[in-house]
Structures are given as C-alpha cells and as structure tokens.
Image 1 (cartoon, rainbow, N blue to C red):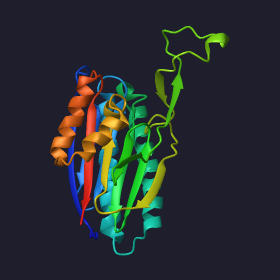
Image 2: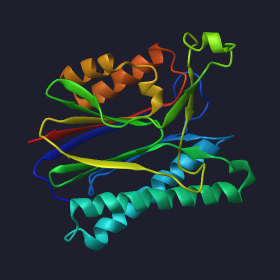
Image 3: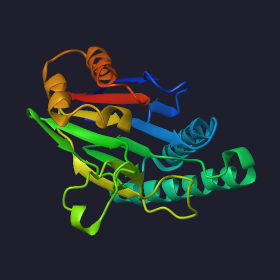
Image 4: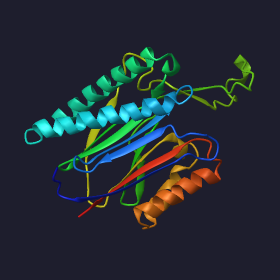
Length: 251
C-alpha cells in the first residue's frame, strides 16, 4: 500500500521481571502498514492463547481486506471495516474460550494502527495504549477502558472515600470476555516526523508520560528507544510483560 511518506518501525516484547511467561503478542504487516499489540489475560497460558488468536484473526482479516478491495477503499470504509473486524475477532476468541474449559474466561486487550494514504486509523479495546509524539509534544490518543476500585488492603467507609487509594484497576471491556464489545476506532491526518507508540500496560503503568516523551525526543534510533523504555519499566519493578511498537513517519 503506497503512502506519501516512508514508514520506519521497530517492535520488541519482554517478559519482565516477575511473570514466568509472556502473554503479550505483537505483529507488523509491512505491506498493509498495519501494526497491532494484544495483552492477554486468563488462567494458565490462556492469556497468551487469547492474545495470539486475536492478532492472528485481526491480521488475516486486514490482509483479506486489502487483497480484495485496496483500489476502491476510502478512509471511512476502513474505519467501519475495522470495527467489524474487531467485533468478529471478539466473537471468535469468546467462542474459543467457551469451547475449552482451561481457556474459559480468557481475554485480551488490543490496540492497532493502520496507515492509509495521509491517515492513521487507530483502534483499541482495553488498556493497551497508543501515543503520538509530534513537534516535541506527546499525546495519548486512546483512553483506557478501565475502572478503578479501592485497594483490597484498605477498609473503605463513607468517611474515608475522599482519601482512600483507588489503586486496583479492572478492565471495563476486553476481547473475548463477553459476547459483545464496543471498540473505539478513530482517524487523524498524519505528518512526516510523527512518531507513534503502541504499548501494553507493562510500560504505561510504570513509566510516566514525561519519561516516555523524553526518550522519544532524544533522537535515538527506534531500536535504542525501545530498549531504553523497556529497561525503564524493569527498573520500576517490571511486574508485567512489556511490549512496544514504534512507528516513525519520514519524508
């Protein structure tokens, strides 16, 4: 798929310091300019199954979309198609979980970015994030699908609600955990020089936006930025898998 700019990308996933297995999955379809991250959750190995099946289904659908109609697609068509693809992906993962007792209840987040002509079409379900770094400013393009609850270690009373720590994060929706899902899909015009970051919450829960922006601004190559951000997350405890995809648009 042709664009008026060049796309440079780099991706890496790290198990972190606590988890024994990596439940994150990522993939880049360079021909279609499509990038995706899924952060799985569930019982023994079910999370990695959910994330892998999500990425597999999504990528196959995107490849099929551009193989069949790339010359006639318009940006609004792509947006609506991605909504349908995510809804169908959710049904597929939910079906797989219901058929296998060891995978029952499995789910995954996802975030994806597709570059088409002068646009990026980005989507997400859950709390994996997409950031844009443009002209020295970092902007979070996605808003987490999460609810915050009081820490289970803190006794909550009516009098203490103003001071209690809401430190327990629970996803309000994910791929595969329910028969329905409401994905968020949006678009924006890109600019050469833009740098986009897709990441699992193993990064964003531990590394502040200020540190992310500082590393994106320092002019390193994408591999070095990726390695540095992963090490930042591990220095903060590395309690989760850490996955990043960086995409830079060049003239």
